[in-house]
Image (cartoon, rainbow, N blue to C red):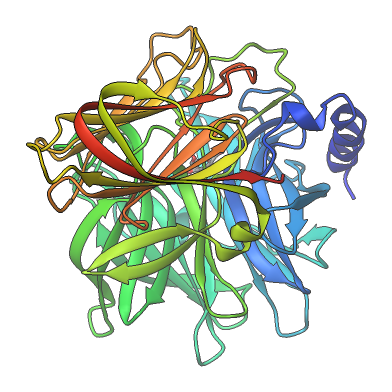
Length: 495
Ligand code: FRU
């Protein structure tokens, strides 16, 4: 083991003791110490789920990337393992970027990841050279492959930038060979997804350009994932530097998924439709796995690149993952639901049925808290004209609240965390277009100490956002302009 990895392991073990469990999310995976971004190597190996992540243990800001590591039986309660990878080799000395994992026929686990090194170009500007690399291990310790890097600039198709070539997602084909989809900038064309193949998982060559962006969705693409779901091919990606498109895509970095088919002759992905994966403020770089019982589950980094470096340096940890979400397809679109394992954490059910609100803001007995799972079914009052607005406000006290509001006439659902305690002039609101039947709506709102995830109409849309509101803000209220009828079912969550 290199000194760089040994140092990281010692550091995280020492420093983690200074973080109280109550100062972390209760049921979302957060950085063991320091900084976390993308999920990496999300996999099921030797009877456990493994989650690796982009990790800078020494600081709560992004820096030379390591791979942090945690394992879980249910994808909710995670135990940290020692850091898995450190930037300690000539081809990754400045960072081990994102990648994926697969179990090999001999029972070992293979990690495929991007190594970066900084180089000066002829003008003296710094460039990040990105190559693909392999490490093999036993679920705790990983040894980098002597033949690294396994894919370099020389393997790229025409026009490919060696400075934007990253985030391999590996899978095994039915015939036992391997494929990986890697994001690459096609100079002057934006991002593209490129497929490479291998007989043995170690020796790789170019296969095809699966799909080009041509600047339709942002510029460079990152973090591809590709799988079959209910007879459709699904391609997931994260786009940098987007311009907004209606309420579908927002400014900055965001995620997308495409439904389509794979044409084995042209070796291209034939896209049918594309949509955002999350309509909130904080969600990026997701990865999926197929669980042993056949579910496709996705976890993303619950942050936003444009706002994630605004915290003070003394913050002991920064960065958390979303809840794991089970994926399915309905009417050609992805449906996302919190994994069913999460339901086992629900306790203290409180139900309020047939609650009528008329131009008022009310609270309901037993409905408050910061570790809660709350289902709200909204019905319009049949006796009077359709209401103008409904809002639920949570993480609330006299000073703070975060709100989800719905205006049925506009068909818009909005998340607003302006009053969540942020002192920064950043985006605090986002809106999504919602299908509804004359004002009927279902929301499932899951609150952890530092986040909210809103699942709309049984997972048709999801809005995720981090909130750093003081934990004393425990209140929940319901507000209507007009007349609404509610059924509210609220559970506490045992973290
Ligand atoms: C996405 C990303 C990846 C890269 C990693 C670096 O969030 O930019 O493309 O591998 O983060 O930490």
